[in-house]
Amino acid sequence: MEYAIIAAGEGQRLKKEGFKKAKPLLPLLGVPMIERLINIFAAQGARSVFIIINGKNKELHKFLVKHEFKIPIHLLIKDTVSSLHSFVALQEAFPHWDSCCLTTTDTVFEPDTFGQYVEAFQQGDMDGLFAVTPFVDDESPLYVTVNSDNRIVCFSDNKYPQAAFVSGGIYCLRKKAMQAAVESLAAGNQRMRNYQRFLIDKGFMIKAYPFAKIIDVDHLHDRETAEYFLMEQKSQS
Image (cartoon, rainbow, N blue to C red; front, side, top):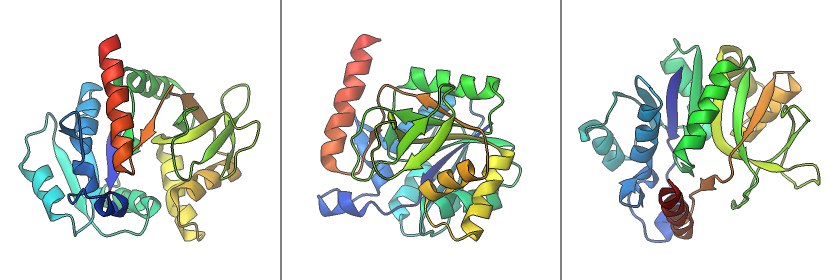
């Protein structure tokens, strides 16, 4: 399985709040978010990591090229208008993928749970296994409804009583489900959440894997939440 990170956004909200570097370079406990993800992937046995960034992020590009990581980095530089476009661009640039674990650059989670999640996907036969969490701390959460077998039956922008989770921005996918991103984009869908709905509408078996907490870092105050969470996890280990 390949591991990939979408880091092509510009982080405008963080820039307005005073963080002038590229969003993936925002440090959590002294480690840039993107480096933290790469280290977690390496700990899971990833052979390398595929990353897409936009052409404006010169500082991020320099960091990824010059920094010594534990595993090789395959870098795609391309300006895209959404995470879905970025995912499709990665597949076009690296067509050999048979399965992948895809994350956004700003998702913060507990590494041990992530390891269990990856193992569950590799041992299962589902088309996709998506990380979900009951912890809601997002400006526009995508709510997730599952059945008794944890198969996802609905993604919604609104909170319904049966929607126990929100999407965590971590996706394990097999080839057919990956290719459906291209079909979804061709059908006029412009956002990652609409691709997720597309998978359900097309009958793909997409299951949910609950994480106790996943934090989406969009603002500086989210960094405080994420760092407290990481320190809490570290103290319990």
